[in-house]
Image 1: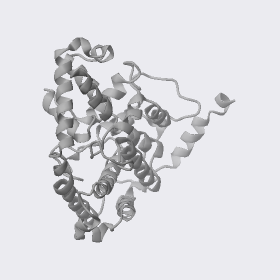
Image 2: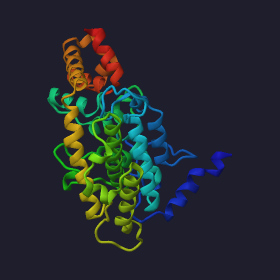
Image 3: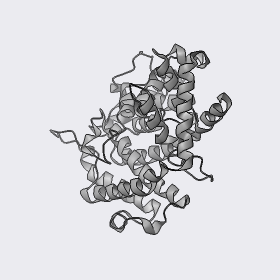
Image 4: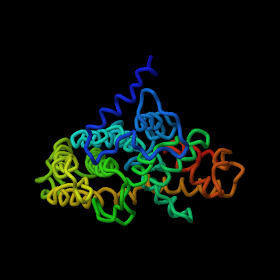
Length: 346
């Protein structure tokens, strides 16, 4: 009965009313390995489901966002961050009449390649591995090679592009001109939603940890964005929708419209970002937990490059060098597993 109804075609027909700048699933550039269409789900809905059900997605619940080994149940993890990004991105995409399924799939997969211990783990692997390490590139390795016993998830070009392009350069600033190109408007939505999410929940975690209080937040930013977490997110999301409204347009536009914020909100967001760097992120690099995390990653890298036979077979099988396999193994670990394994091996 489902085959006869072909629900996917009804969904694809509804997508014809989306913005002319939205990606329609039936016009996807496709997968590296062609697959027969699903009778129920569009190509992007299938991608979303594959991401949710993969092992790397589940492990995000035990990976640090900013604070390592926090004593409390309400700190943000990499998984809760991912869900917040997806919620913010869906809201923006829906308001701008974009493809919400594509947006959600990119958002749910954007941090699959993150290391244990947050950006601390990423920085250490980048330092140790001669070819460098960036979590968005690792996300693609997971999608293409590491999941499903080397077969990967075989996602569509649009989802892969959005995941690869969600991260700014390592030397760039928030909403900077150096962010590079993303192949879809939906990918741009996820990138800006990522910024909205982490600026606001990192403030909440810093207050929870006793590092700052709400009264420390810079007044010029708070006067624009709002004093509370919900007000700031609402202000930023509303501003993005209003500033990007031409994305909905059916008129012929010479240049592709962009997802953006107004100058006043960009300035306020940059001020908050700078405050977080000075009062929270930089402080984290000197904490005892951070030093311990760095030592764990360094030890594991050293141990497995020297004891290749101890590296799980799947990581030897899917890597062209020992170092690549070691990086893949460590990057996939949760904080708890990495710490426990280092103790056992020592």
